[in-house]
Structure formats: structure tokens, C-alpha cells
Length: 283
DNA sequence: CTCAGTGTTCAGTG
DNA sequence: TCACTGAACACTGA
Image 1 (tube, rainbow, N blue to C red):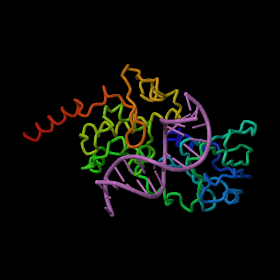
Image 2: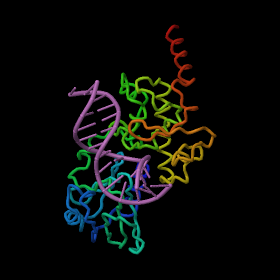
Image 3: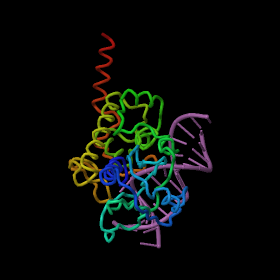
Image 4: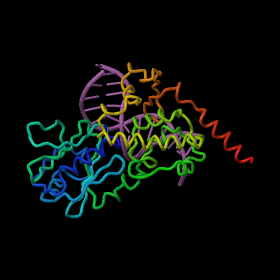
């Protein structure tokens, strides 16, 4: 499930297993959809003999830097993953790129559904998809005040804005739904109509959820029991741990799982805050 | 057999 | 131009 937390977990895997090692050989698949800009043979030629110096991530993109200029960019799309193993007999299916390291172990990128890209760039930070990314909620702090500025007069539903990588790099469909559920915000709410208390709750939950997901290495079995996540897949799992009914609806072109009973347009917290503000203004 | 899906991009609309 | 929507992409599994 390649959203921010999964990609960060894979970056750490690469960091732990491959840092400082030299690539002795490279195996590539003949796949000109995943490797759409550079032929597999060229990627292999570029990589062979290089030493891995650092690993990086922004949003759902990760890249590896070497002892010579040129970055290897990995994007996982809907179904990709990164694996590390020693025994070639246990190789996963649909491997697209395998880096064989000087200790004999293998760092492997796979992508069964082929929506995802392996690319090469002199400087990944300047590469087209990465350069356009907004703040990453794990690397950067996103403040409620900044959001309030961004959202003035914006009418798109908050659910759709959360999926916008130029606003929240790395947030995907389940993280967006989880944030809205935990901060009790109706996913249809136009961005510009969100109150200050809602924006504070949203930013706090955004950081907390991602922090937790990374902390447990994106292992969903270790996500807190109260999360909507455990109940949002499939059609029959229609109730949260609290017994609330889950609604499935398309918003911003994606299926949104939400709980109308809990996620109201104008929650009590906002009313309270507006009263407090008008009181303090009038005194 | 049909359709939705953890993501991104691009054509099209107002 | 801008803000936004929806289809397309490739494949798997329910």
C-alpha cells in the first residue's frame, strides 16, 4: 500500500540493508511501461559498480544516491514494493529491478500492476514529479494558519485537497479518510469553509496518524484498534470499532469511506470557538 | 464476467 | 489562466 508511511518504511529498509555497499550486478525486467524513460539496459549499466551513499524520500517518491552523480528514482504506484532478501529462491513475483549487493544480498523493486515508475535523474529534487510536490507531513510541519491561507475561497471538498500532492505530499486515500474521520470533518466540506478549530484538528491528526504509521513500520496489524482503517476495505465491513455506520461515496474521483454520524459539517467545537472569538473581539 | 482499487497525469469544462 | 473534475493507464482479485 504505497502511501507515505510505506514508502518511508522501504526507504529505511534500503538505508539499513544497502548503505555503503557496492552494486556488483543488476537484474532488470524488459518492461518499458515501468521503465518508460530509460531503457532497462541503460539503468543496469548506470548502476553496476556504484556504491550506495544515501537514500531519500519526499511524498510517495524515494530515490537512491551514489558515489557518482545521478539518482535512481522509485515510484510505487498502486501496487509496488521494495524487498530485501538473501536467498534468490524466495524472490517475489513481478520483479522489475534487482540490485545485487557486494554482500550477496538483493534489494528488489517489484510492481505487479505496472502503475509506477523507475526513472533516472541527475538530481531527483529537480525531477518533474518531485519538484512539484508540496510539504511532506512527515518531514515538514504543516500549520493550521498556513492551511487557512491556502484555503481562502477554495471550494473543492477537503477530501480532494488532501489527495493533492502539491498540498500534502505523500497523503493517499486511506490517510486522507483517516484524518477526516479522526478530526470529525465531513469530507465534502469546501476547504474555505473549514473553521480554525477544524484546521488545527486536521493538521494535528495528519501529523499524528503518519507518525504512528511510520512508527509501526506501516504494519497495518499494529495500527491502533480505533482507526477507521481496519473497517474501510470491502463492502461488508460497514461499522467502525465504535459501532458507527461507514458510508462509501466517490469524492474527488476516489472512493471515500466516512462516518456521517461523526463527521458533521459544523461540529460543536467550531461553534464554541466562534462564540469565544466573538466574545474576545467584543471585549 | 464485471468492476473497483493504496496513484498520477492529462484533456476538458466553466 | 485558474480551479477543478473525470477518464485513462495495467493488472489482480473479489
